[in-house]
Length: 184
Image (cartoon, rainbow, N blue to C red):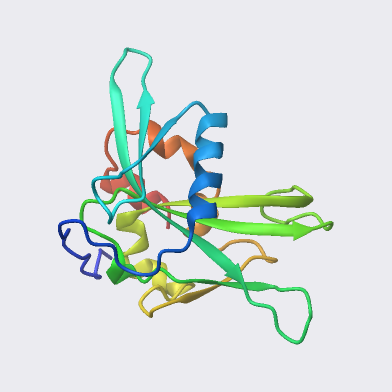
């Protein structure tokens, strides 16, 4: 299996999609700071949301470009949501992006089966762009359309089970084929 979705080319100062998601970006920055990563807004490039820097033990700096989106809960008939919608098609991922960060809000007093936490918090799915666009991703998640559904009250299925809280990815200089394959 391999990457089958063509990622879009970078265009000078153009942003695809809506201008929403600012709160998700701020929450992402806060989480990076808590974990010791430096998150910078890419103000001169509108197609990349953040550049995250990690200082390695030997002083090397590792940079990752990130596109951030949020999973919006689908509320039907006033009942508690069990699914969310992610409005980030695989074709909208730029070629020069390393990771897609999907914030999945949880605001229930019940314990999340994925995070083990109760109450208001955001679960982060950190997905290498090559995983997001890989045809094996489509087994459980249809990232081809303009938006895709993410059930979040059940255990995440591959590759999102490995993408949950995968902050270690910011410490990797490159994403090898072996690392990408390990998500599946």
